[in-house]
Structure formats: C-alpha cells, structure tokens
Length: 517
Length: 96
Image (cartoon, rainbow over all chains, first blue to last red):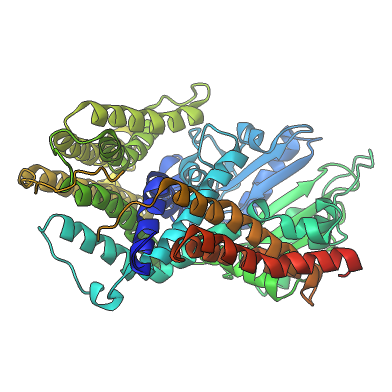
C-alpha cells in the first residue's frame, strides 16, 4: 500500500466498516432498544397492571412452581426491578436445554397472582438479537457478532487516525452538499459519541470474552470445569438425596439477602433441586444498585432457610470485568442516564448508516456510467435501503404482530419473531425490485407508516392507548407510543428529503475508468 | 481521498496478518498472562482476556499501517515472539 498512513487507514476504515456495516447496524439498533427492554416487554404485555411488590410476586411464583413443577431440576424467578411490574418464573426439567425453558414461563404480578398475559418474547427478543442473532445456533450468532465487533473496533481506531482535524469536525455540518454532507454527518455521529462507541465496542467484546478468547483458561487450567469451580467457589451443585422436604418461606431468605446488601433489592432467585431435602436457594443481587453486573449471590439451605457460607471474593480483574459488562449493559442506569445511553446508541446507528450511505455517495461521482453502475455498487446501494429502512420496518411489524396476532395460537411468541423477519424481508425484496431512488423514498415512507400504525393499533386493540395512558399518568405506555410517533416522524422526514432530492449531479468524466470495488 | 487499490496478493497477505496473525498473537498474550501474571489465577486469566482485544486491534491496524506486506509479517513476528517465548518457558519450567 503506497501512500501516507492516513490513506492506508482510510482504506482499512472503509472496507472494515463496509463488510460488516449492515450487521453492525442490526447490532446497534437492537442494542439501543435493549436499554428499554423491560419497558418494551411491559408494553407488549398490556394485561399486566398494578404496582410492583417484590416479595409478594416471589412468593406467588414459588407457590405456582410448587403446584406445577415439583421434581424439576431447577426453578428460576426473575424478580421485577424498579422498571417492571411482574416477576417471570420458569423451570428446567431434567435433560432440557437452556432455551426450552421459555415453553413454561409465566408472569406473576405484584399481588402474587399468575397473569394470563399474551405469549411474547417482548423486549428480550431484541436484546437477544443484539448478540445471538436469530434462527441460527446461539454459538454461531455470538461468533459472528464478535467478529463484527472486532471489525468495529478496528474501524474506530483506523477512523480516528484517518481524521485530519478531529476537533474541527466536531463543529462541522454542511447540509445539502451531497457527499460532503454525508461525510460531515458521519463524522458528527462518530466523533460526538466517540468515547461511547469505543467503550461500547470494547466492553461488548468483554461480555463474551470467555467465548472469544478462552486460551488463558486453557493455558492455566487442566480443564475448563476447574476454572469454573475456581470462580464459583466450593459451593457447587447439590446432589439429590431422594428425600422430600418442604421449602422454608422465600420471604425470610429475601429479607436476609437484603439485609446483607444494606437494603439493596434481590434480582434473581434460583432453586436447585426444589422439593428435595438437599435443595439450595440462590439469591442474586439486583443490577440497579451497582455498576458491576456480576451481582453478588448468596445461597441458602432451602429447607431451613439458613444462609450458607458466602462465595469467594475475587480480585481487581474480576471487578474490572464486571464493571465493563455493567457499563455495556447499563442495567444500573437511572432514567436520565438511560436516555443518554439511548441517545448515544442512536448516534451509533446514525454513524453506521451514514457510513454505509457515504460509501455510495463517494463512489457515485466516480462511476464510469452512473446510469449503469457495476454490480458491487448496486448491491451496496440496495443492501443499504434494505437494512436502513427494512430493519426498523421489521421491528415495527414485530410490535404490530404483538397486538394483532390472536392470543392462544400455538407458538405465538415465535410467530411474533417471525413477523419481524417477514416484515424486514418483504421490504428488502421491495427495495431490490424498485429503482433505487424510488426505493429509498418508498421504503422510508413505509417505515414511517408502520411506526404511525403502532400507537393506532394499540389504541384500537387494548384499553391502554395513548389517551387513556396520558390520563392515568402511565409513563411507560405514554413514552412507548410517543417514541413510536417520533420514529415515524423521523422516517417521514427522511422520506420527504429523499423525495425532494434533486436528481444526481452530472458525473465528471474520468480519465481512468477504473472500478473501485 | 483517493488511493490506488493495493495489489491483490499484498492485500491478501495483510488481511491474513490482521485476521489470523492478530488473533493468534492476542491469544498467545492472553495465555502467557494467565500463566505469568503475579495475581490470583482467575484474575490473571481475566486480565489476559480483557487485554487481548486491544492487542488484536493493534495488530490489525499495524498490518495496514506499515509500508509493505513483508514488513507486516516482520512486525507480527516481533510482536508474537515475547508471549510465545514466555509460554514456552513456562511450559518447560512448569511455572505458574
């Protein structure tokens, strides 16, 4: 590679960014929504109302499990944090895989009652899409997203080196100037939130580092299980005694845990070998109290309700890792900070999207014949429409399917997820078949209409539309519907701008019509 | 900013150094740190893992920053030698 360092870094930045750009957009969009996954889940289960009561819903869940899942391998109860109302319970029968638990998940409200809420994966689907993808084995998804994150990290570093004047670009936005404007917009989204982008990419890799970089474990331990035992301490899995014994009230154990944590809320309860005399209850601290996510866990003998010896404490590196994961997931963040996370996430989406558009804007002027661009150019152009407008459209159809699919149909939650990909696929196909300028306008208009439809359909199919929610001061439902309207407005504006755009400038004839792809 | 597209073979060579060489070097550092760092062993493992992504990114950027593909290979060797040596010594000596 002849030429300056800046040129070779520009090359690296361009191609590392382009190759994984579309996937990175998916990761950024779903990651941004994940900051409000609890609120999204609440909106997607409008049957659940009332106030949160942690102890009552925990006891309600244990009662239900005792009636329906006696003899299971383990019970799990996700307790409601300050942002949700209901607890979610589920259990694992012997031999079941991790993902089968969803088939017997149930919700318990603050009065301790099991609620017959519609079957949905809620905000959790978007959260899992962020790092597991969908329809493919989880481990593949994680590796693919991990490679994309590594490309992102390289794109960030090379992008910063490419900059001539990073400080001046911070204040530069020249609108209506074609390629120049796209570059400015890309710089703005990237530079304004640069610390966030760097933090989120690096900590994202750290969240799954035991998958991506297990070689330290291989080098230092004979077996991976030795490492896991060293992490978890001697308090391992209990063995089944075969004797049946009743369980002590969960409220007492929750109170002990809370006392140990100076009043902090428990977040998760697991009962191992429920009903057996050797059963163990594990209570993990909620994530709102500390930036470190790997919350502290205390164990109890289930039959007596007595606390067992606490697990080993780890050193600075474990805490660093825990805080990095916490910074990434933002579970500790109170509302204002949470919105700041979302704003930074949206800047990340804008950075990736403008970067993708910039690739075409820059090359359009250099095409030998702009009316007949080469295949690579056309592919990028179409994939851009299909992803930048198509993915948000698919998410809107996911929300619409949540309100429109009949309750009680088999595999309802799976069909909601399918609706996301059907919506996305249909719009992507449409974008492939239309002339590209029309495709931009129409796909963005379709996305705008879909987001406009979400609050409308919500108002028509539930009693919790925007107006009743406003009157009742239901912040979550109001904010959700308003966000849908704001997204609709954003896409409508983009469609209008794309429609109004003057026809492309007459291309300069080039001396050497060399393809750049 | 316009620049000539690099020759295919040189490009392939750099991509290999960045993708495969970068990962192997990062893995070697992670493994060496897990065995050598003077701290609790789970902590040494974690420190190595956290640091490895920065090393990977640095190698990847290096592969495209240096003047020729040959130099990229030389630098890869220079960067990879210390952890490889450390690992070799620790396996031989049964250290850590």
